[in-house]
Image (cartoon, rainbow, N blue to C red):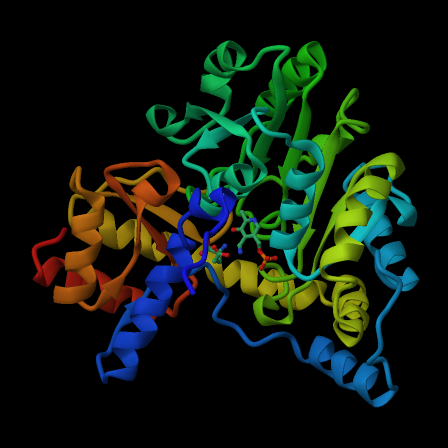
Length: 382
Ligand code: PMP
Ligand code: GLU
């Protein structure tokens, strides 16, 4: 038959980050040696204690549905973790989701109607735009690229972009794709605008454990933000658990009641035994998290130095494991050449509304990072 696909689904493209990593995987399957710096995925195994907790949970028979919003010990562990961030959180204000992506999706669906205005800070992670379009929202974008990807110098522009008609603002610090960590002054500026115009704010804090300077501030901990912030987090990045699919959202109980409807009608619940492993991750994995963070910090320094050796200056990231490399205006063509000629996979900046850049994920070994730069230089791409 010829399907009449929904307008909704035709508004969006497949995830560009996943598309490039699929292409890299295809080329590898054909025998090419690709240095894959595309997808944002830690290259460490999940820490052993978490794996053991998952196995123990399977052996103990935790294989059925759980209550929709999550098992009580995990919701309590998450609330306690958030209290450590200065957020006055309770277990009933949490929904445990299969990945932070689902938490974001549920949040956007819960607040955005057709024609509602949503403000993004560019460069912005690919899926925010898609999620807003799926919900029928209209995007207003504020470009942080001219400000070395920092928010503080762009607060005036943000102030001009938002109005009483703005429904939702998305803040992601540390940022994917730039690695920028927004200052407290920047976050207070966001707070002032959100309160003035009565705007809901998503604070996507999925990279909060991967920072190289001061610990980042949680937006919901600021005065005036508790009842208008939806805090998103997940286990993929901090605990190297991408394939386990575990994340969460925290918001007011009223919000949880509404978002919980979508959660119960779509995913039912996050995977039972994975939730048990999540408790272990939150409670007993600090040393492994720090070790991975330190490894990312060394790789960041190495990459910045290698690029500097070839005369390339980058905005040095303070968090996550991404870096924006300035490339040709046609970043799509540059990335195609990088994968075809140099066998190095990066994501075109245009996927994040940052034309003229390529995103490098440095969640790869130092040896592979050196190899990538050498190959890009040999192919005259640097
Ligand atoms: N937010 C950001 C900014 C991300 O980069 C990702 C990466 N996948 C996610 C949310 C969602 O991650 P996950 O679904 O694996 O928890
Ligand atoms: N967030 C990661 C990235 O940006 C994983 C892929 C995705 O979910 O987009 O590469």
